[in-house]
Image (cartoon, one colour):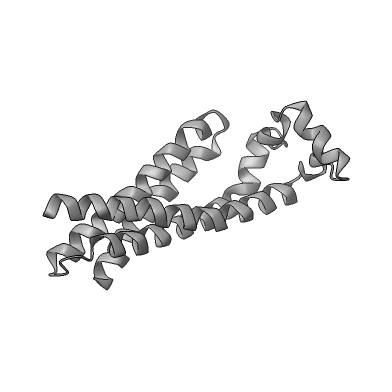
Length: 155
């Protein structure tokens, strides 16, 4: 099962990193995130199939979760490394901060936090670091679903 987790995680992670490179281009970032989610699920499915093929009868879900965590972690670290490049290609601004509605900006200003101060290269790396933690958790869940599909198809 460990071999399946590692192989599935690496396959899903490399695919997600490829989609992360696509997401650096500002207009393609919208399409890249759903593709990265599918890559995490693919890693989980592949890990589940390998684990079931090696004799682990009910190991598909667990292998998928482990592979999803590996794929999500690889994707999150790639996003941290690509954050400065994405910031420069987006015209030296974090598009997500600029597109937030004014009431959200006002809410954070009432708390004493100016979101536009995050609109720097350092802010883009910080936000990518926050995403990395969520990516491997969400990747584990999506990978577990992929492993569950592999388990269901094997029975």
